[in-house]
Amino acid sequence: MAQDLQSLLDKIKQDGLDKAAVQEKEIIAAAEKKSAEIIALARQEAAQIVKNAEIESANLKKRAESAIQQSSRDIILTLKNEIQSRLNKIFADSTAEAFSAEYMAKIIAGLCETFAGAPDAKLTVVSAVKDIDVLKKALFNALKDSFKNNYEVFPDKELAGGFKVNFSGSEVYYDFSDEAVCALLAEYAGPVVGELLKK
View 1: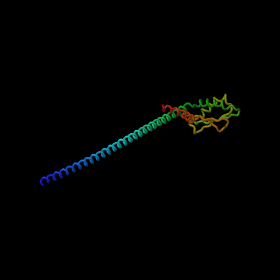
View 2: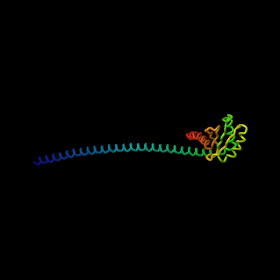
View 3: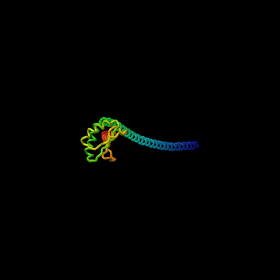
View 4: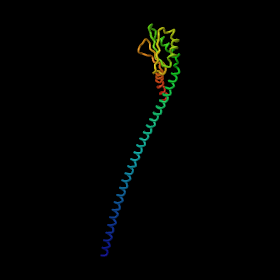
């Protein structure tokens, strides 16, 4: 009887140990599965973080490149405008200096030879107020041999310098005012400055 009891106790003990071993294996398997899931999730999250960082880095690079290009364009445009402004001032100063009454009279005399060949040709000159008296005298000297008809010289308060000339009373005036000559020079210089800045 004692032996049966001992055998029963040993069996219960063995069943308990077997059951504990099975539970231990299940717990270890569950822990390993959970650990593998956590590691897989961590790797997935790490991969997503790296991917997001790469995208953000690429976006930052694009924005930086775009900002640098925009800054470069702004600098070149500012420089071009400053050069153009300085050239315009040089043109204005040079034109005002170059258009002496004597020089204007020579230009007008040359125009008379080209455009005023008709016997009834009439010449009208419009000039800056400050140049009128000197221009009339210079024209008299310049035109006495080449232009036989009368001519008229009128002041124009709107003109800072230079002159406008008209033949035979037409509506068309040849414009040699400071403003027109400067605009012509600036129009020519603009593309040249632009090309220089591209190099």
